Image (tube, rainbow, N blue to C red; front, side):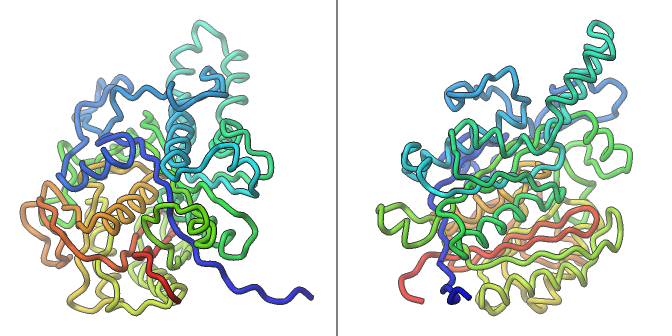
Length: 410
């Protein structure tokens, strides 16, 4: 029997972002500080017949500088986002690609839709191409597992585990937690973890039909909230052991302290407050953190009536009647599905490193049934030591991540 190994400390050393509010960690962080909205008219597909069509779309993004090895013809939009964000994260971490290729590594990408946007294009082309051509194209491109393998192929990684996680809107946190476990156990030396999704007709129409879409703006925790706004993008974090980061003099944005996962399968779409509270406690126990040590909560905060109420109740179960400030950056980014909690985790790391709390924009009046300080409309400076990142998904898939400021010593 092998002797038990002391779990390694895991830190965040690189950030890659493609979002409606900015590309790259610097631009994304500045947008969070300023409370900039990415919402605008949706142009990804024909929205004739919908009463409203506002979304947080990534406009004007050219992936070409970030894609060196892959043929762009085989990439869908979500794949372009994922590969570009991974390249950015590796560059931001100061990791030479040749050095990265020599290390046992992990690529974990969370996604809700993968390349479902291709269905829109393929349906439009079916008249010209015929059903057989359409079926062949679908078979080649739609496999969700390609989201992670594309990143591994672009970086020419060979000693690598590549997996795509599809736990809906909690997938980004799931991917980060998976990487944290692998690094802590010593199974890999570096992990590229995050999420990616692109706007598509299927998701937009689905949320529209169930009445979850707001007509103009996303207002989490507001008394007059009307629902979510769909978005798109990708966020990828470079995780590595503390020893590795120190050995190469890397910048450390934050330390991964712990995470919790659960799936209550209570309801297809409605969150269960008790289950969400249990997931928070799992994360706190994993990290060895007490509730009163948490300085900020990055909420799932979709601005739907059911989500915000259940999440706020769960927060009060764990943190009492005076919980930490609780912000919702979906007010700026929209709901980016599989990318959502990865982008939020990047926001948490930037907030810890930069000493600020981003605002919850579009806020008018807090719903008294939610009763959280959502830092309305204007961000604030703050000394953040521990930040909690919530992700709640359909089917009761919950994932909570805890990040902290890196400190020497135990």
